[in-house]
Picture (cartoon, rainbow, N blue to C red):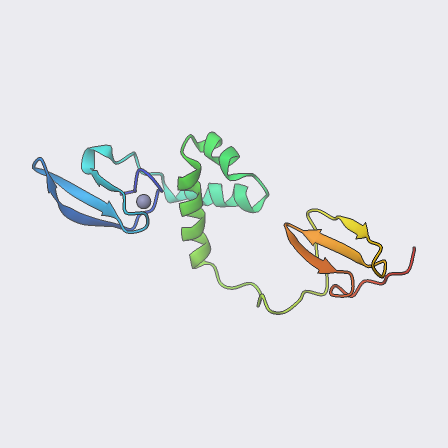
Length: 134
Ligand SMILES: [Zn+2]
């Protein structure tokens, strides 16, 4: 059974409403009775969504493909991701990085080059890049 709001499967029974079993989503607190529960998606579909996600598809795009809400997709990806082993220790800086976006800026102060990745800024020195011209 899935929460109709967030797609979580972490559901608890929560008394009865008009003689029907009432449920509450542990994840988001949404209450609902059995008849509101949408058809569950198979684990195969969920894995497919995860594949699309790791291949760079947006959550809303995936939701359009499988005809569900993007909040369901987020919940499934979290579920699958929680089962995956840790691939790396985040504290360790990788030797080789791949950037989605690269923005450099040469300011007046000391001519420092800044690189911004998804809203986080690093100085060129943080990344071990030289400041010499190519
Ligand atoms: Zn929920």
